[in-house]
Length: 214
Image (cartoon, rainbow, N blue to C red):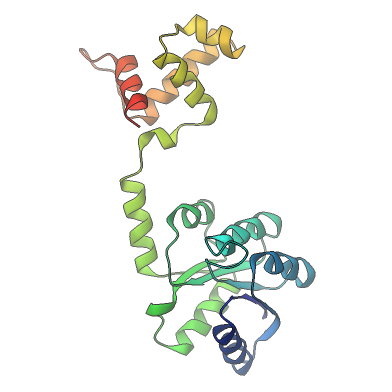
């Protein structure tokens, strides 16, 4: 398989190149920053990109954000994130769609070279390789996620106007949409905030309380 490696630690980058080359794979590029990663993938269209999370230029989550861009532009390129960190927000985004051709391994938990090479090959072939610790942290994040985050931008606008005391008609006038559209958005808000119809509770008030408590 043809591989692009993105790792800013030069010794680790060289080690990955050597390891994969000795395993019979073709490393077509090895770069040290997120911008060069995207350029290398565009140029070589590899089977797999091995990507660190924290890379220049910002040394935050540049590598993972670049991986998401690559996934959108060239979905046939396998992505294997190889990092010390679980960057929950962008990891969740990377894994939000199909996980075919996606891997996320933690450097400190890879104890066997042959297992790493096997995982890389599996991802390049369209399979999945996820460290259980990554899965655990992302599931915990989902469990504690603020329900407001489930709302679409338009639903947030509607709920914000509800919180200001606007009626459905006033919301419709404000957003230049029909009252029927407003009612549909409100129904979706109730559903996403887990507010089923009850005999005593006012779902509109409860939804507004969710908004005010975020």
